Image (tube, rainbow, N blue to C red; front, side, top):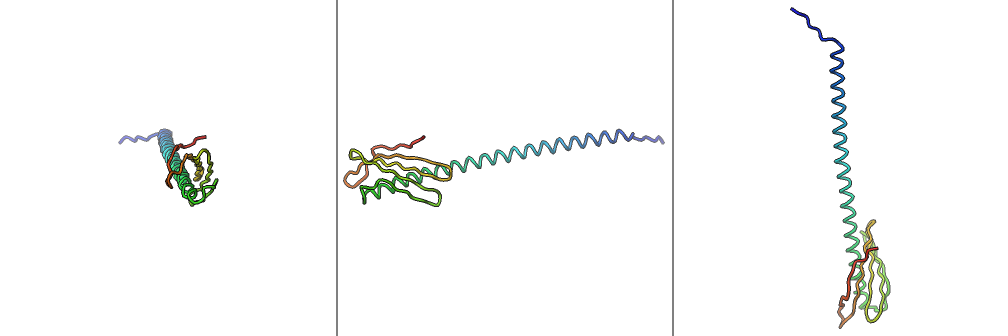
Length: 136
């Protein structure tokens, strides 16, 4: 019977390669996990910003409607402000040449949206002469 003994240094070398391989795999999987987390976090922030932007737009449009209703009762109204659970709106009204220019600024979170409408009251009904979203 032949006695074959594996030298101790050869076993240690194989153990070193295995440790290195495990370390590389662990680093690879950690990097992939971090990448997935960062992408998901970035997408979550984008969705939140888009939601706040839409809420700010809807709040600004609501401010225009609020101004229309109040101008029917009080044609001398020149400004207003409202607060909601999701944000707030500031309304500025100017009257010139038979038209009202209503500017509404909606805020929701960090998002700000501005709308301007030019209105004319004809037979108790609002006629929209112009509508634009303002970007600054």
